[in-house]
Length: 164
Image (cartoon, rainbow, N blue to C red):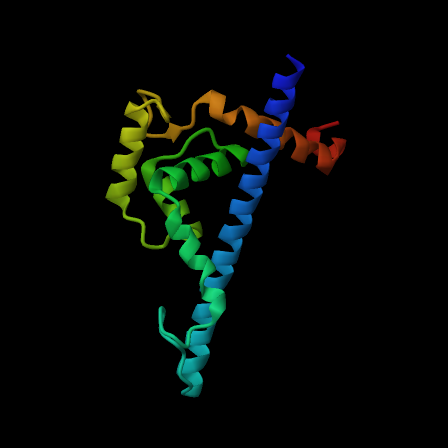
């Protein structure tokens, strides 16, 4: 039985590391987009040439943005719902999910794709949708490890943040 606890503990650690890595990747992708925009603006104002996306002259640092393409839309939906849960939101509408994915993971995501994938994930039991709401959320079993990370973050802030 102790082996199972060790495995479960390690599994939680790995899930948390994956979440931290995805957060970092999303931040780096966002920064990369900002740098591209700044480069295009400076190039336009100075008359310099800024390499187009996918050109051979493009800086090698552009390659991480391709990694976000390797995530499937269901992965991005689950990731987005986990992130919103950590910030205190119980669920999100397909539009809110799409907006978050568009801002943080994939600017080309289509609204109708998010809606239909959410519906399919709900039908397969991967998401929960209350009858009286348009919001989707992850099942409680998928959120159990996130409860631990939220408690850890609160403890790191201190008792005064917890009302103590």
